[in-house]
Length: 223
Image (tube, rainbow, N blue to C red):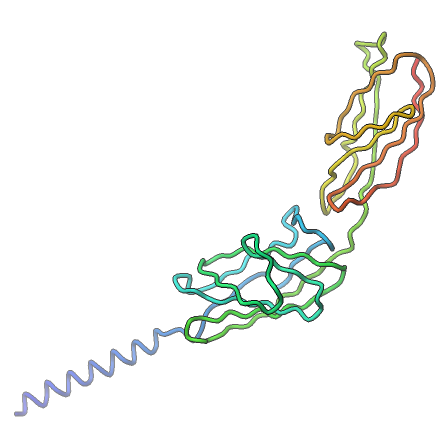
């Protein structure tokens, strides 16, 4: 009888120990992580140069977790896997790392409440700060030189690689030479003059937000 009681007591202790161990290993809630501050240019929907890309860490990755973002301004918009997210719309994320994309209508600083809920209803919360810079216009620059190998035909090379848009991308280059208009998608262009004279040149660039630079006015003296 004494041996039976000892065995029962031992089994009870093991059972209690297992329950305690199981309780200690149970997480208090899902884990949520990302860079606290994201920088973006206003109206930038292409997310060039990594602007507006938010990499979010969620755990446990093997379970479906519901991610939710709340914006009170109405000027911040998010998308996930190509789908636009409505404000406070829960989205299921199952991977450990998830990339969201952000677009802001107007320059400013915005605070976004981010929450993550697991299958047991437990939640984690974190605040995201979005700093949106004003969309600056691109700057146009143009160089040219005569083709010394083809002086008879008076061919000229134009180079606009000095044009810049640090927060986006220049999409097109626009020329007006001697009254003729040209649009090209590369920094360099050739043009052939057929006779001597002074030719007016107008030049500007357009960026990914359809913003125009100032127009440059120059005169080329073709000898």
